[in-house]
Amino acid sequence: MAALVAVAPAVAELLQAEVARSFSKWSPTKRLHWEPGGQVSGGPVLPKNRHVPERSCVACGAKMPKAQLVRVAQTSQGPITVDVAGRGPGRGAYLCRIPDCWGRAISKGALDRSFKKDLSSQDLESVRTYYETNIAPQTKAP
Ligand SMILES: [Zn+2]
Image (cartoon, rainbow, N blue to C red; front, side, top):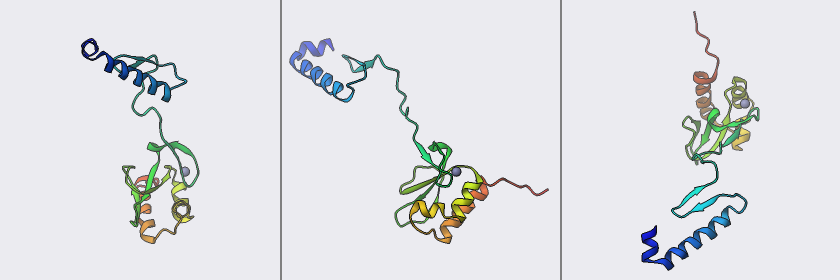
């Protein structure tokens, strides 16, 4: 920094003024302290994803972090399928892991309401298959 100031003091000053101004613009209330060199101190160290995104189950309405819900997604014009990774394109609906909710989603139209259309039997079949292998209580035959 010192070398930079020696070489171009006017530019460095302008730069600092600009940074200070934009900083006070986006964070007028937080008492963070900007230090030359770009370090922000005075606040807690922010992890990348401090905010946990929450979604509601389309059947019971319970709100919880996305990671605890199963995403059912419809890509444009595509079929509706369970989006296991949870980050596919298209419109998504979320279901919690309570079997009742899946029953409601599949047979009582909770998913149809969420997607604002009638799910085809193919769509329902892929959701049902996921439900049966991952959500439904596994009854093992003796
Ligand atoms: Zn639910």
